[in-house]
Length: 264
Image (cartoon, rainbow, N blue to C red; front, side):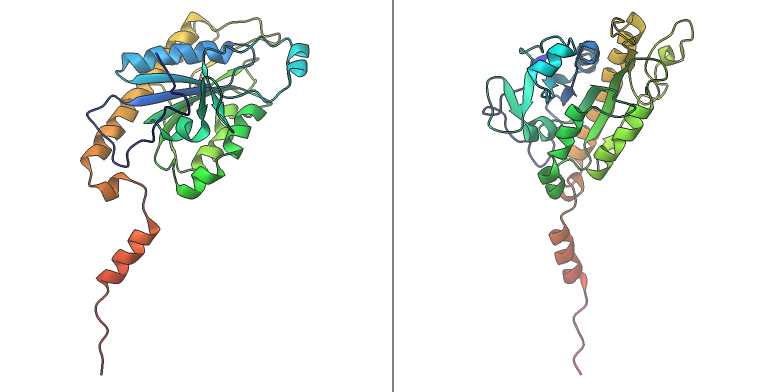
């Protein structure tokens, strides 16, 4: 697993994808009690097994240390690169680099009443500038989650978060039932056709099972294969078709195609 580059060292991707380089997949997650972080590290294994470079990135915390202490939340792993919304610090990456400078993104977060947590929502609320530029149009993404119980939002949490990705024109890559393990009925397990998942239990004491970890690794591999195919396919296309449409370029083309006016 490669660490994400710091904001000062990262470089924007070229306009035309390069099929000769390894796909670069960012695994971006928020984890309060470590369950999602465990899944994220397993997903990285799947990404790497499919031949891509995986970069693990944390979504920054929005709660104060006092509140986190009252919630008995463990300290975050500071060795993992964290997204910075402002001036970058040590081991940080800018929001734009985290979302743009890659060939695909796998997002992980716990549920909050059937939806994404405020920490993850804050990230998307800060992407207005990227939306204006169409910077994420056509970028593949997947989602993995953690819930407290079986009815706690394994599908709903992903489903309700899709609006953020859809407005950016991103491409959702669900796992479906591409792994027979998803249909395993021998034990209770998280995950759905939407993406990998785990149950934390009402008190957070349950950790991801071996089955859930295998499903997470499968998601990483499955997603990477599709992201790789997109990368290769786009590299083979002419530049105009390989990138998001430019309205100005389209308008100019329409004008040039018009027949000259007939003067009488």
